[in-house]
Length: 114
Image (cartoon, rainbow, N blue to C red; front, side):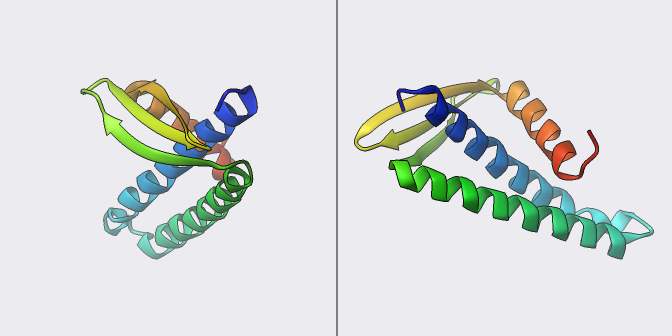
C-alpha cells in the first residue's frame, strides 16, 4: 500500500464499514420514535446504500490485491487496521475520536445532510 490512492481506498473502506456498523446498531433503537416505521425504512435505505458503496470499494481493492487483514483496538484512544497488498502488510492507526468524526461526516453525506 505504498501509494496515496491505496491509502485513500483503505480509508474509505474503514469508514464505510464503520458507518454500516453504526447505522445497524442505531437501527435497533428506532422503537423509541413515534414514526418508528418511517425511521426503520430510512435506516434500511441508508444501510443498503452504504453496503452498495462498500461492495464497490471491495471490488476496487480486489483489483489491486488489497484487503483488510485485522482491526485491533490498541487502547481506549487508538485503533489499528492492518491491510495486506500482495504480501506486504501495512498498519493504519487512527484515533478513535477521528474515526467517529469521519464516520459521522460520512453518514451525513449518505443522508444528504451536508
